[in-house]
Length: 168
Image (cartoon, one colour):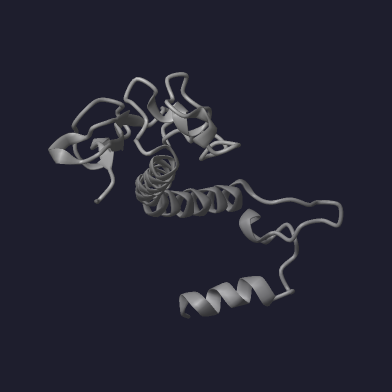
């Protein structure tokens, strides 16, 4: 007799009395409900496996998304800086920083040229909760530079800890 035949016989054969059946195969009484400990452990194990697979696939995506958001914020700030220059004929000084995009700097030569409401509604923070950095003039002959220090908040670094600057 094969294992499958034995299993089917035990499960379907009603000639056994309840007390003759092995405890594992005993049918539940009318008032009994619930799951066995084994069933619960199997379900918990499967949920744990699925959670592990999801976490392994999702966490690297979050790092990439944070870098992409930082690049998008920097591009937005650079566009606002260009609009500021078109209106005021110069970029904000490094001492005024990016706050010059929200409120007119006190040393502005012609305050009437400053756009009412500013150039951005509010300054974004980088994805790690720190303000973006600004320098005018920028390195290598650029008019300005806007950057984030990355995940570690320190200059330099590699991967997600690398400084994030615009491509241009």
